[in-house]
Image (tube, rainbow, N blue to C red; front, top):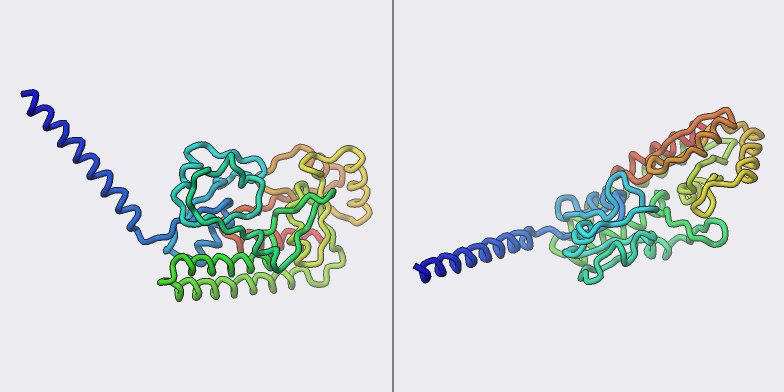
Length: 285
């Protein structure tokens, strides 16, 4: 009786191990590249180039902010099996949020952009890391994404090249459309709470003034200066991004007898998001 029971237990263990191994093999043999990215914007860019040839995992979830996000152990685990990690030079990409033993290839899209365009800085030489908000810089990112995907999966080179070309054409059309929206605007300065649109301003010869300084709300002196400036220029609106909530921006809008405009800068639909940002800015200049 004991021998029979022992035999059944061994048989069950072997079946569990076999089924588990089959499950792992199925996942490994899916034929898709496993790509990890930091923010939703990158996911949209990778999917534009890869189509259905890649499974994309995002570190900062939809609705989260890369300024404040902290990954849970479960979220870190999702990155462990990635083939490629496309980084963005964001502070959130640190040892607390990424697996220490991951075997993925890391490709820094921020570095790829720096090979073509100079970085912008906030006050006191603090680097502006919002590079994805420049359509011109995103074109560089798309080129790099395609190059890396082809290197990892050369059998599908034609697909990646075709998708890359199609998406670059859309980005070029976006760039021209935004330029046309802003052409001839006498007022070239806009106000925003968090200084996220410096690279966008750089692309289209605009000036961004931010209420926030060094990650903190502006002091009364700074607010007074910006209120006086806005009134002197007839500026009646201040922008803010949807993942940031601040009472100061609402109070500032009241001071200038204006309104708060919320824009989306982290969405997976990059072209739609940036086009909306451009429309909002064009509407208040």
